[in-house]
Image (cartoon, one colour):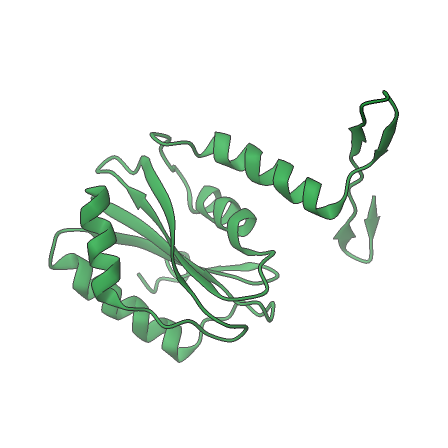
Length: 166
């Protein structure tokens, strides 16, 4: 069902007595996260920016605080791990490149996709977003790790790669 550009989904949950009830929003989000986790399990190759955006939307769009996360990939762009590295407030998070490097080396990654959410819903990258992206790209390049994209999640998503910024 679509109302004013928004899609409404109703799922039913079977209770122990055999009756059905509408699923809560939290149950729907949990079911979606479970499905996306199966879809992007360890070893699954990411073949398009759309796949990465879908994954990051499900992980980050519902949060009320900013999270900076990294999807670590091997040399064939297969998923090694998804890691939430930094947690912030409603309008920002402090990012430390030293910690990004430590995590990259821990996972023995060859590439990554970085992402963060904007709880305000506006996905346009700020100047600070552009600056930290360049700093992370420069830092990880010193240890031969490629940053494939930086995705900003709001009501929609903004891909630095799709906009020619990476």
